[in-house]
Each structure stands twice: as C-alpha cells, then as structure tokens.
Length: 86
Image (cartoon, rainbow, N blue to C red; front, side, top):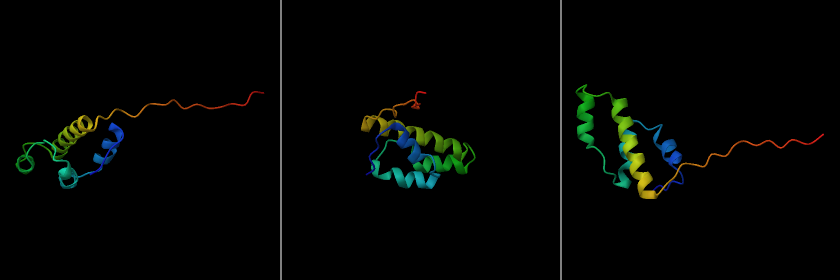
C-alpha cells in the first residue's frame, strides 16, 4: 500500500487518474466513498458529469488518506539567492 509524506503527494498521485484508474488505485486503501455503481449510474444517466463525480471522489479520498496518515502540507520554503559581496 502506498504511503504518502505530504498532502500534495496525494494530489500528485490522484490528479492524472481517470474514473476507472481511480477505482483500481484506491481499492487497497478500503476508503469510505460513494458506491461505485451509483456513481457510474449518475454519469451514464447524465445526472452528473464524469469530471464532477471524479473531482468529488478524489477530494473524499484525499481527505480520508490525509486523516489516516496524519499528513500535513509540504512546507513552503522561499527561494534564496546567495550573492557575492563586491
């Protein structure tokens, strides 16, 4: 099972996934998500766009993985430039 260091690592992992790839990738984590068949029915019936469903699912997965693994955001480090004194 994949272990993440920061919340952004989860985002980087989830971002490129399609609907099918998402379900395959999150299966080992046993996350509490909307039922896959229900989501597929909503998409097939035109009730909700696939992009919207996928966005919500990825958000839910990110929240649960963040909580389970106790993750925080990657520290922001300002870019510093050392300049030689003249």
